Length: 156
Image (cartoon, rainbow, N blue to C red; front, side, top):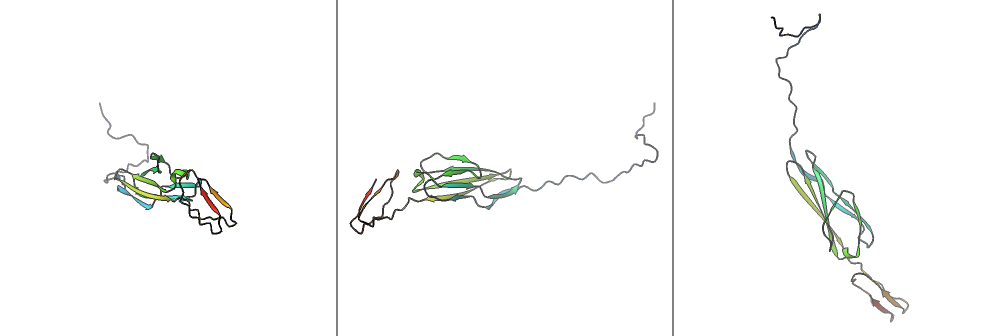
């Protein structure tokens, strides 16, 4: 019995043999994450205002995954997503809001942090007509008032 080692070809077909090995795919180098743009917390710190979380921009190969953790005064840390928003509350006043963003790929992890100070509101008000100024607040506020014309300041 005869065994054919070559496939049967139609007439006029040519076989081309290469003495070079097939090309091997190029694997990109692994590059650890680096923050190109730092994370930020943007918006007004006035009570009730909306503030937005921004994770920044990270380079690295392969593309790093980003995770964010937000810590507010008197509250447990929570996981947040890029672009999340929240409102400034009375418990934030006089404290600091911190955002920690971690970029991770197979090369390593790197963290960047940003802090937003939320000051107490300052009240510099005085009755100008000898009247009574009454101020109410859910949190302790520093009052700066000097009634120049005999007015009365009452703070609650």
